[in-house]
Amino acid sequence: MLYFIISDINIQLTDFNQMNKVDNDNPFTKPKPDTEVEVMDYPDEENSTLNPCKVILFNDEIHTFDEVSSQIIVATKCSSEKAEALTWEVHSKGKAIVYSGDMNECLKVSGILEEIALHTQIEM
Image (cartoon, rainbow, N blue to C red):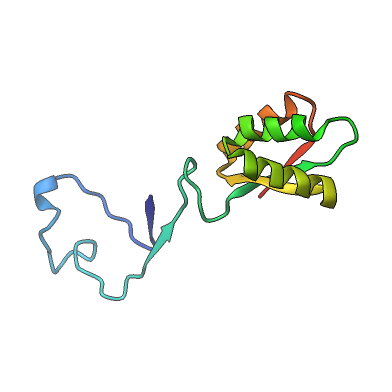
């Protein structure tokens, strides 16, 4: 999605047929070669890839290895091998990034992990 910011221009358009006509006596229709246009690209809220969010899963002493691995599979839809590797990282390092993506998806993944009282955090 692109947004255009045009500074110092105040034009009132009343007739669409007159839009492309240039009146040299009217300063508002005269082309201004020195007018700066800044194009700013804002990320879509649904598909933000510029700054993806991360779901961090923390280790605990309550859940078994299999419980955590199974819940990671449900939450992230990853393979059992990937889930086991992530579970091992959580166990050995105390935490691991188990998912990266847009905020809405991270909230869903975090919610599924927390269904069995796993401790998660979302970082931007």
